[in-house]
Image (cartoon, rainbow, N blue to C red; front, side):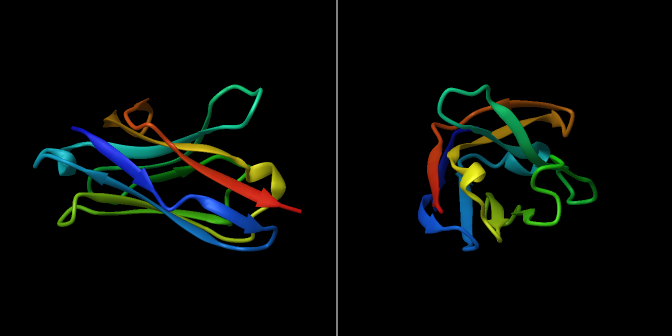
Length: 117
């Protein structure tokens, strides 16, 4: 599966963005998907994950209640709705996939989100 992330940009603190991850191939619906992020000078960290059938979602504590992960298997697209953004959310966000929400690897090149204070 090949993926392309989009939707990043510059936003003020408190604002919102929706990231998209468009996947190629009919096998998208077979995979658990998720998002990771990496801030400048920091390790890559898990953000959110969703099972192939939307039944299971997982979030990092730092984004719980502010970010919502979803997917549209008919459109081969993964989303991350982000609200109440904080400067510490500034990072490159990567689309990830795998066999389970606990077993993801980064597939995409990333999209940059910058939150100004």
